[in-house]
Image 1: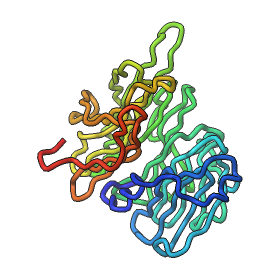
Image 2 (image 1 turned 135 degrees about the vertical axis):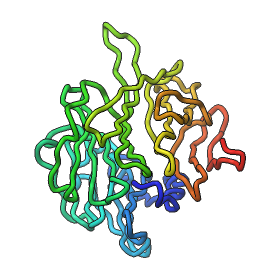
Image 3 (image 1 turned 90 degrees about the vertical axis):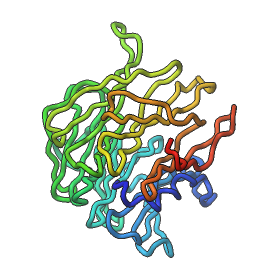
Image 4 (image 1 turned 180 degrees about the horizontal axis):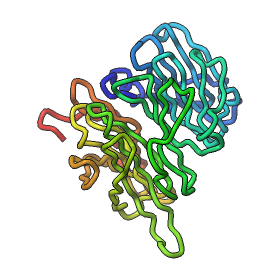
Length: 305
């Protein structure tokens, strides 16, 4: 989603589990995990939750619920959603790219070349909200980035497959649509017993990629891109994710100012829940860790980070 339309995203940084108790019948505690924004109409948005997708087209005066089975979403996954200019909704799921008609009443999985693929993330082109990208990630050799120029009706690879690695995130620079970033890991193997983080950078719209290694810290298992500075395609932000058993390891908000080549730690919290820019100022949402309680909404000061 375009970082320029960022005001509603602050709500996402603050959202907790205050949703109807009746939703517990669907197997998981009710919790919101994403605001799904329309790229041009502020009255149209959705809230992705553990019990499905809740949509409004009147700025929140009324809402309608789309359950997980209708979208083809498994109970155990919380896929990211994106909304195109005509209201079409894209859901990146383990079973493929789920495409919903405007309003969310009818859904179907995209056909080839995405059919049956693990689609881990999706993004919109910042200069054209009819253009979308889908990122596949099942560890196979055909993993890569796919682009749709017709509102999600058809898809084609942006270039050759990127390789047998586990991608997690795709982000497009708001100030340069040709600059695309990916992040993820190479799992541990017998030959390489340590997980290896990475960031991939493309400067030609995904036709070619440069891999930039990312050094995971002690007790960390992944690096997840959060966003690219709306004015600078070389400045990007990510979060590190600790190993599940390492409750003593905080998440780090990290920043790169050279296109992903080097990184610095900006903030350490229990969990980074979201990131947005308001008037060019960075805002970060966080949940507290059991150890230090450093949650809430964090804002960069006048002196920067």
